[in-house]
Length: 193
Image: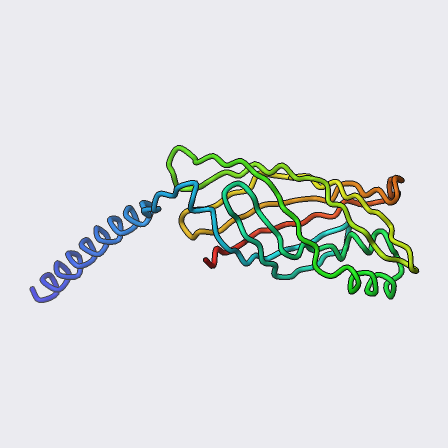
């Protein structure tokens, strides 16, 4: 008799735990994402940047700011561009030191999705013009930048993701060849302000 009562209690506890498990699993799928507005994209960001040119990859953290319809880099990552133009590593470092910080503004348009939980950004990159000092002479480099995918600002964690590419470089009016595109992948940028 005692075995039957113990078996009934264990069965009841097992059934109740299964029911609670099922209800908790159903509720996990319904994470409430706070609605976002287009204005929420504005602010200061710190982002992970992965640069790739063929087999060569680099990674660093960069800062940028978004205001209204413009993303501004106070210091655009130009090291790979200068390396492609100059070729000599020592002269590349000298040129980078002489050039200092290069500011770049990237315009975009934005659209809020139907569920109002993310913002899609369509970038319109402009050419980047650089004066690269090599052996006492400035080389005028014009870099054609392109947006390789739309950017996304996610409302759940207020992060931004996007990809740019330097597709072509002309130096003093002549296209740099051979040249392999430089990809600037920003897989995770955190809004800090």
